[in-house]
Length: 237
Image (spheres, one colour):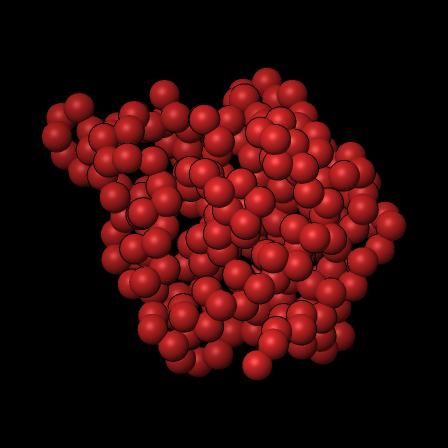
């Protein structure tokens, strides 16, 4: 059976996530997608602004949680592996996943994913640097065009909607294990040096030591102790 996602496109909006949350409250169905050519109020994790020039992907989709679903927070891993698989359609060498769901190419940030919840609705917003990449003060960035893989937002979203639907189905039918394993296969190597900046301001340095069964980050500290990170910003050292 062919897959026909429900994709709506607009020229400009404040935030596709905000719009999708409103659509969810009005009864929108799971699998709906909203894409904007430009956002005037795009946001990243922890409320940071997301630069939104035309030519990149700004899109959000909706998942309706069901009683038997795995934990909602693990949809961050589903979104990451689906996005990495979509990138491979246009750039066969793919990208590296950094916890929980950023994609990097040669250490430079390609994309960001933001999950927001309202009741049984999880809205997943995805921004991908297709044609442009902003200069950020705290990390290098890149785009698919910079790696010789130019692709338009509509074409890219067609691939992403397909990969996300397939990984969402596996998450529901098989549980988190296959998603977690694919995430690990596409992530930076064990032993990679990372810094985790926690919501309370603490910075934790350690070596990447995998994921817990529920998808939290494990760091191996200098003391050889293991620290489990459930929330925070992670940077390559």
